[in-house]
Length: 564
Image (tube, helix red, strand yellow):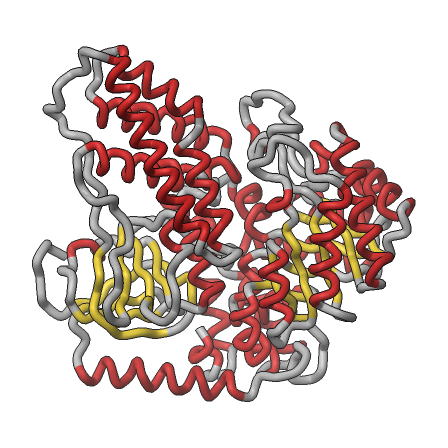
């Protein structure tokens, strides 16, 4: 597609949030770049003071937005402000200034050094690269006397297009004015993808060419199949509206607990990360929580949260769900999610390093404090609490964790299966615990040796990849042998078609963004367990992800297509 075209055309990206939308395209203003002809710095001290003042202005602006933001957006904005105030970043800029670079080039070079370091760490730190570059862009714009880049004020309901969206921008979007999101970069597990799904905004990522479409052009997007139509015809809009109507009709009948057509139960649960998430999810027709991420209590802190502070938060979450189950994942941190109060030092490959349970076994004070708080919250509420540990790879780790959990009187203990070794040896590991939950995002990146934050590897990170399904099958086989339930709490669980395959493999619960539950519930109710098992076999027989999904769609009830 060439710049300035107004011709009718259709192209594809990766659909990451189902739904359809038609509206005018609003293009996020590209961030200004450091001028190549910028004069060199001759007074490093004076320019350093100027740059530090601008960084503080950027941080203050993010703080101001955080002050009026909701509970979900606030920590994201606060994290950006913290990065703008990072002394290490300021020192890196000073080094560049002393080498003679102009102020905007010094900022750009210093940030890129930080980004390279974060990307090498992988995991959570790699996810922060977008925040860092957002700080860079805001700082460079201010130094050049230009407005800060970002999402413009949407005067009418529109479809937003960008190269990528910083968490600070996606966190403030609302369904009132944002009809859909299309990005040229990003991946299925990017922040944009996950947040769009949580908000129920149709979204497509990896849509190369979207930025060549002029602002104001009418576009139609289908977030289920990843299709974008530029200047759609009246007939195409009509077909899209019809698909939207059919999807609404298909979802209208989905109520009650999750189950296949012949009654095989598949519990449909919510993923949450904060107390605010819990309050919102508890109001939805979900059967509980399949993944309560507890990291938000620990990250970006100089000291460990007290047992009393943790207990208060856990109690609030447990009370929100009454007698519905709540699966809590203990702290998933380490070298790729460094904690200031539990830094184990640098590692050459932190994604394969001392994270999750490995950190807990070294810093037993952190693990024991969290378990003590969870036990206190359980005793205060008598909730259906189930506690699981991340990154389990061996029976010894499972035994160590199970003994600690049970010693405190917590009723059920489980493990995350996100390391292929745990799936391969699930029978032995499950002997020591009560349940397991498949973290398909990490399980896939370790199975395919592909960083899940690298959009260029999106093809390898497609959850329909038959190799991933084979690993899931191994885990489920162990669960069936031991009579222990296996759930899924990765993004794969929210795909209505893939949910059928997972049920066919033996998964007994699926956890997802609450907005995805109705479609998954409907999909399950259209098919028997035998059909799901046949679909699972067909998907595993495929040679790639595309073949696997096509095989399942050919066998499924035609209504399934309206749910995607």
